[in-house]
Length: 229
Ligand SMILES: *Cc1c(COP(=O)(O)O)cnc(C)c1O
Image (tube, rainbow, N blue to C red; front, side, top):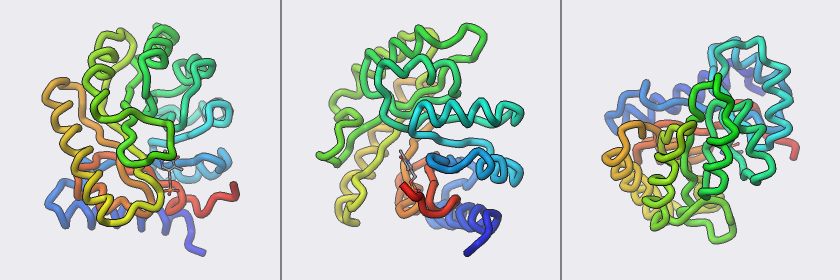
C-alpha cells in the first residue's frame, strides 16, 4: 500500500498534469483534503507534509477534530456536508469555510451566529447540477437570488460555487454538466469580485474538473485510502 506521502505527491502530480494539459496555472488549483471518517492523527500527518485545507462532512465529527487539532494554527477547515439549521452555530463558530449553502435560512443563521472576533465565514453555494436523487444544492436558475441574498449578509463572504456531480455520471453527462457549472461560475465572478472558487472534482474526476475551470478539488480516497463507512 502506498504511503501517505506517496499518495499526497501522486495527487499533486495529477493536479499539475491536468492543469498543464489545459494550460492552466497549477497554483490556481487548491487541494482540499477530505478527512471524513479519518482520525485526527491522519490529518496531523498530512498537515506535517504541508497540506493546510481539510474538509469535513459531519458537524460533530468535524468539531471534535478541530478541537483536537487546535494547536495546528494555520490549518483551514471547510464544512462540505449537508447542513441542518440546528447545526449552523457549530459551523459558524468552528469552520473557516462552508461549501454547502443551499438556502437563505442557512445563510442568515450562519451570518448571525458567526462570532464577531472571527473573519467572515467564506461560503460557496452548492449547485445540484445533475443528481435527481440528491436533495442537496440548488438549480442554476435559483443562483442569482441566493447569491444576492448572501451578498447582503455581513458575516459571510461569497467565494463561489460547489457541486457534487452524481457518482456514476457518464463522460457524456460530465461533458454536459461541467461546462454549465463553469459558465455559471464565470458569470458569478463578473457580478461579485470576491468570487474566486469553483469547488469541483473528487478523486476520480479531478482532471476533467480542472479542464472545466475548477479551482479546488476535494480529495478523500486518493489521499487517505478507502473509507470503512
Ligand atoms: C467524500 C466527499 C469527497 C471526497 O470524495 P473521494 O471520492 O473520496 O475523493 C468530496 N466532496 C464531498 C462533498 C464529499 O462528501
